[in-house]
Length: 581
Image (cartoon, rainbow, N blue to C red):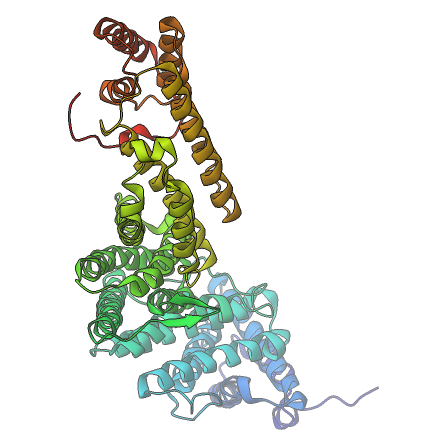
């Protein structure tokens, strides 16, 4: 069997648990004896044991693989001395020695705090900090990396040297958390710039809780529930408010700068760029990237910060849209032809609308609706601007619709008109496919509205059935030609193809009751038709007496009262008649 070692030998070989038990045995033998010299020697040996125990404990995080047994023995010795303290506390017959209680566990815990405090205060450089741009960032990174590396050392190496009741991983976690908190509070006593503020928030909300405390090697051993906040609530709130205020200010400044750049290009007459054959502006790309870039940085901090900042940025976006609206209104009020700018910005408006819809969850207090209304107004104004220029080009051709020349076919009114319209459409192929398609649909509507308005201008009286049938046939022929052209250009508003045919039917009919029925059906299908529109249609039918007209108008009123609702799109409300007939 192995020889029994003396206390001195055990101490020399760092067999601290065995050395401690030998001292406990001597302590029991001396109890009740009056040998003061032996007591003094025992007290001195206890001090030597304790010094060696604390030396091993203080080196806990830097011990090599072959030295971990020393720590395990020291921890076991601590447990033995704690047990001896408890025995003396329960002893009622004998007087405890002067060195009792040793309180090794309390001393051990204080030693751990000294270890943590010393390592967190160390100015030793850590890998990864050199590329950071400020001393604050480097310090936070150093603290965080030191904390993480040391906790991993505890979990991987130190934990195995301690019995479960020491709960050593949570003990170290609490101590490192407290030390980290002190250092972070010290840093926030100074005014931080935005970059440092943002980095600090990243560590508080993201890196520390997620990359450190929830590290897969630490998660099972660390209970984070009882850890206090790294910073007081008021300090954290101040940091977050500073972060939000800076971001809001920067976005406001950058978006305004982007818009000013766009406006300067227009004022200097710089033609918008062409890409894939259509005009476009980089403005929405710049604005969206600015907002999403800021939001992406906030996402690095936390989902809550991201959502709060995104809502703030949407408020800034609403303000931007108001400035954007003024800019585009100035463009469209200009005396020169600004079609190219309008074409480019119609695509921009579409991109902005898609972005607003995609981020609807971040808008508050009706902001989304206001943004959509602003963009819808700009979109309508833009298409109206382009169509207005086109209508000016065909105004002289449109003027003959609803005249005797049109009725007699002495002029090829519709053929000339559509030839010009097709020429104009070809000139707008420099729009993006989506905006061109929208322009086609709106022009389709505008031409039929103008056609109807021209018919109702009191320029033609159809005195008999023959003339009325001729006019109805002419309208139907024109309708088919319009339909053919706009179908070729991809108009999706097929319901417009029926409008002129319905009007032709009213003009063609001769029987009063049948006319009444057709007008009633027209009112049902197009609830926005007014008495003025009906009167203008009936004016074309010169063979109707005033009594018949009055009867028909009276039945229209009854029909409109009976109509509750309709899903039809508005049409006649767009046909504006100047005179009340």
